[in-house]
Image 1 (cartoon, rainbow, N blue to C red):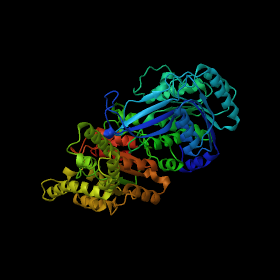
Image 2 (cartoon, one colour; image 1 turned 30 degrees about the vertical axis):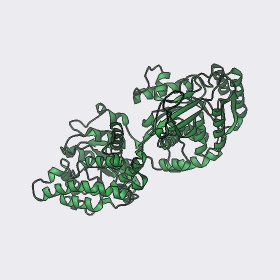
Image 3 (tube, one colour; image 1 turned 90 degrees about the horizontal axis):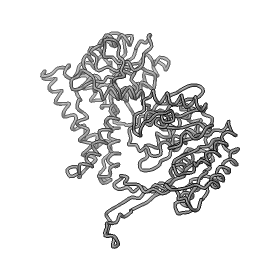
Image 4 (tube, rainbow, N blue to C red; image 1 turned 60 degrees about the vertical axis):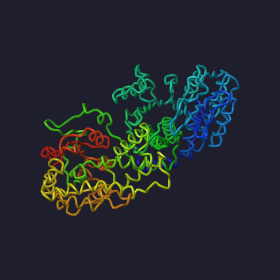
Amino acid sequence: MLTKTQLTGLLSHLPQVRVAVVGDFCLDVYWTIDPAASEKSLETGLPTRPVRGQRCSLGGAGNVVNNLIALGVGRVAAFGVVGDDPFGRETRRLLEGGGAACGGVLTQAGDWDTPVYIKPLREDREENRLDFGNYNRLRDEVGATLVAALAARLPELDAVVINQQLLAGIHTPHVQKLLNGLFRSNPDGIFVYDARHLAGVYDGCLLKVNDLEATALCGGTYEPGDAITLEEARAAAVRLFERRRKPVFVSRGARGCLVVDADGLQAVPGLHITNPTDTVGAGDSMLAGITAALAARATPTQAATFGNFVAGVTVQKLFQTGTATPAEILAIGSDPDYVYAPELADDPRRACHLEGTEIEVVETLPQNVRITHAIFDHDGTISTLRQGWEAVMEPMMIKSILGERYAVADETLYGRVVKRVRDYIDKTTGIQTLTQMQGLARLVREFRLVPEAEVLDEHRYKAIYLDALMGLVRERLAKLRRGELDVADFTVKNAPAVLRRLHQAGVMLHLASGTDQNDVVAEAEALGYAPLFEGRIYGAMGDVTQEAKRIVLDRILSGIGADHMGQVATFGDGPVEIRETRKRGGVSIGIASDEVRRYGLSASKRSRLIRAGAVLVVPDFSQADRLLAVLGC
C-alpha cells in the first residue's frame, strides 16, 4: 500500500504543500487538580479544588492545523471564528505560535464564546468536563466574510480541510450554501470533509467519516458503541461513493480504514499497537494525514495508509491531542505491524475448516506450495515446559508497578493495574523476555507509584521474573529425568513426531525463541529433538535490538531469495513470529494450543494469531497428515 521508499518520498514532498483548514476551532484546557492544598471556602464552606498546573492545546480544527504543521506541510492557513474573550486570544496565540497563517480567523463579538473544553484531571483521570460555546450563534455576515476569505486564497492552495465539530459552530445553513457554491465552482479542487454531526450537507467533497456515520448516511439506525460489521461498512462506503462520485474514506478505529474511489474498494488494515492508547484527536490526525498526502498527489489508498500511520503515532500520546512528526511516522510506517481479519478473529462462527479436520483456513494457500524451510517457535508450539509463564509474570509485574502500595492499594487502583498488565502480556506474547521487561519499566513509570530512583532496568526485572519461572521449569525437568513424567507430558500433541517427519522429508528445521539461547538449547536437548535442528536453534542473547525470530527469518530469506519466500513456513503460538513471517511473504501457521491439556484449541490464542496474520490455524499437530499434505511435505 505504501512502501518505505514511497513513504520517504511523500514525507519529503510535504514542505512544498499548501493546505487550508476551515472549521470549528476549539481549545482544550487541562487542569491538574491536587487536593493536597485544598481548604474550606469561607464563602460556601465547601472544600476548594486547587489547580497545580494548567495547559492549553488546540482542538477540533485547531488539532487538524497542529497535525498538518507537525507533518511538515509547508504552509497551513486557518479559517474559523473565535470569541472576543481570553480563550479566543489564547487560540489565536497558539495558532500563530505554531506557524499557521491566521488571516482567516475572525473574531465575533457577542453571541459567540470561543469553544472550550475544560478537562479537570485528578490522578490522571479526567473528571466532568466544562464546556463553553454550546449556545453560540454565528451571524450570517461573519459566515459570508469567512467563506469569501477562503475563496480569495483558493488559487494558492493544494487542498482544503473542512472540519465540522460543533452543532453550534460555523456550519450554519447560510455557510453551507456558500461553501457548496464554492465547491461547485472549483470541481477539480481537493476538498476533504470530516463531520461529527452534519456529514451529508456538502457535495463536491471527498468524504471522511467513521463507520457509524457512514451507515447512518445510508439509512442505518445504529447507536454509538454499536459494532458495525465489515460487510455493513463496505456496503455503506460503496453507496456513498456511488452517490457522490468522489473518493470516500470510512475509518474503523483499530480495524483500519476503507477507501472507495473510481478504482474500487480497498481495505487499509489497522495497526497492532502494544503501548497504552488514547484515541482523543485520532480522527483529526488521520484527516490531516489523508489531506496532506492527497495534496502531495498520493492515491486515495496511499493517503489512507499515511493517515493511518499518523493516527497510529498520536493515539500513543496520552492526555493530549497529540501530533506526529515525520520521524515518528517513518518509524511506525517503515515496517508496520498490521491487524489482519479482526472480524474473523473475534467471531469463531466465521471459521472455515478443511473438511473433516480442525485445520482452520484463514486464507487459501496456492495449490503448488512446497515447504523447504520450517521455523518453529518453542514455548507453547512444541514445548510446554514453561506452561503457566503468564501466571508467573502477571503477579511479578503487578507487584513491581504497585511497589510499597501492593498490600494496601484499594480495589479500584489494583483493578486498573491488573487490567493494564493482562492487556500488556496479551499483546506482547511471543517477543523476547527482555523486551517485555522494558515494557514493564515503562508501565512502572506510567503509574508513578514507585519513586523514579527505585525503578529497575529491564535486566533486573528479567532476573526477578526468571528466578520465579526457572524454579518451575527445573522442577519439571527433574521429574522428566527421574522418569516420573515423559516427553509427551511436556510437548504439544504430536509435535516431536511432526519434527521428525519434516526432517526425514528433507525440510530444513529452525528453532527460534524469545527464551534465552542457553535455556532453549538445554530444554530442546532434554526433550530429545535438538538434533533435528542440526544446530539451528536461536534464542535471545540479552540484547533487545536482536530479535531471534527476526534474525532467523532474515537469514533464511537471504539464503533462498525473496522470490522463494513462499517455501518458508513458520509454526508459532505467538503473534511475533506469525507477523514477521506474514510481512516477508512466508506461510504463517498459528498453533492455538491449550498448553494445560497439550491438545485442543485455545480460543484466545486463535484470536491473537489470526490478527497477527496466520493463514492456517490448528490447535495441535494431531492431524499431521492433512496439515503436511497442505504444505506439500
